[in-house]
Amino acid sequence: MATSVPVLTIDGPSGSGKGTISRAVAERLGWHYLDSGALYRAVGLASAWEGVDLSDPDAVAACAARTDIRFENDEAGEPRVIVNGKDATHQLRMETAGAAASAIAAYPAVRAVLLKLQHRFRRLPGLVADGRDMGTVVFPDSPFKVFLTASAGERARRRHKQLKDKGVSVNLDSLLHEIAARDERDAGRAVAPLKPAENAVVLDSTGMPITEVIERVLALLPESLRRR
Ligand code: DC
Image 1 (tube, protein in one colour):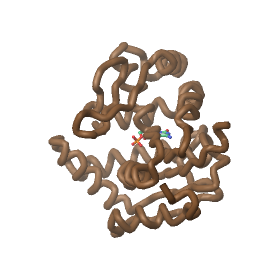
Image 2 (cartoon, rainbow, N blue to C red):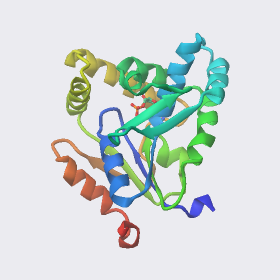
Image 3 (tube, rainbow, N blue to C red):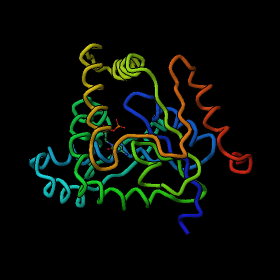
Image 4 (cartoon, helix red, strand yellow):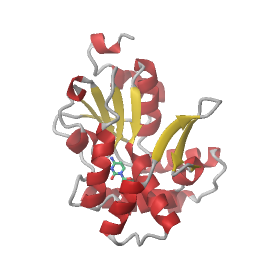
C-alpha cells in the first residue's frame, strides 16, 4: 500500500536550498525524488505554449490534465524535465516560469489535478518530496517533515548564483524583489499556503554549509530507514 512507503517532506520558500538538499538526501537514501515545483512550472509553461489564458483557472486546470510531464536523467546523469515531449529543463528554471507557476498554483482546480499526480511518486523504497505543501496537504501522514528556510538575502544570492552558473544573467536586486513577491503570494494564498506543517522540524540554513544541512535532515530519519 502506498501509505506504507516512507516519505520525507521538505517544504520551504524559494531559494531555501530545498532542491539541492532534497536531491542529495534522496541520493544518499536511494529513494525517489519529487520536484513538485517543476510540475507547477511545467503547467505554466504548457499553458503559455498553448496560448491558454493564465487568468482562467478552469482552462489552466484542463491544460494541467492533458500535459505530459516526465523526469529523466541525461547521459551525464543530469536531471531533465520533459514537457509534452520537449526538453524544457532550461526554460523551467527561469524566474518568469517561477512567477507563472506561483500564479497558477493559487487555483484549487490546478492543485487538485497535480495532487493525484504527486501521490503516484510515492513508491518503494521511499520518496523525498520537495515543495510548499508536501507536509501539509500532499503527504500529511508522513512523520518525517522538514521546513527549510534561510534569510531573504541569502536565498536571493543562492538563486542568483544558480542562474549565473546556468549562464543566465539577472540583477540581484530585482531577483530579491521577485522572490519576495513570489513568497508573499505563495504564503498568502487560500489553498495550500506555504507554511510549516505542525509536526515539521524548522531548519534555518542561513550560513550553514550544504553538507551540514544534509546531515541534519538525514538525522531526522530512524536508523533503520537510513540503511541502504
Ligand atoms: O519550488 P519552485 O520554485 O520550483 O516552485 C515554483 C512555484 O510553484 C512556487 O512559487 C509555488 C508553486 N508551488 C506550489 O504552489 N506548491 C508546491 N508544492 C510547489 C510549488
